[in-house]
Image (cartoon, rainbow, N blue to C red; front, side, top):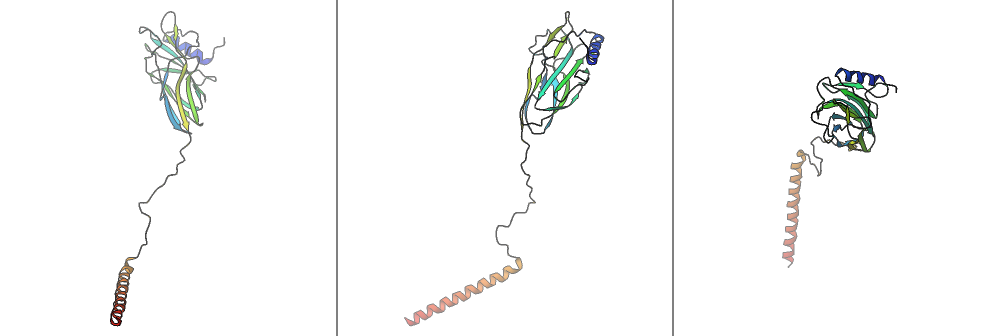
Length: 222
């Protein structure tokens, strides 16, 4: 079996810790990502944190996890970057000796200390979501935890660890106001208001006088 340069580096590190990592199995590691669910606008770029999670795997408390082969795949999105975890050593394991492709994360992680603790960061990655619909992030075949026991034992499980809803971009127009209310009635300039009042008064006086004169004439005829 041909061994890639990434596997050689990984195996070398495991000897240094020391640990013989063994041959990869098809079991998948129970890593989790945060956030594991969410809804995003079309075209959003989101950062996800990867955490170790040993719950439900049956790893004895006396066994130390010394190496993790991290393999994740993504559907409906594009991986744009991966950041190494702090305090751990990460080696590229994707084809081409890289740590990620547009649809996968492939990193071999080892510790030079006693153990990789449960719940610690295994790095982070960014994803751009260019397609509307339901998208997923999955633990792919090839993910394994290796513990420092004799014989070396692999632990893990497969399955989807992230499900997201990608919607249409927000095209709602933005409406801004200047704080000036629209004119909803006739606006009369102040310099005309006095004249209008005088004219209305004259009309009232003249009208009243005419009405009075007509009433007087009717009384005389009667």
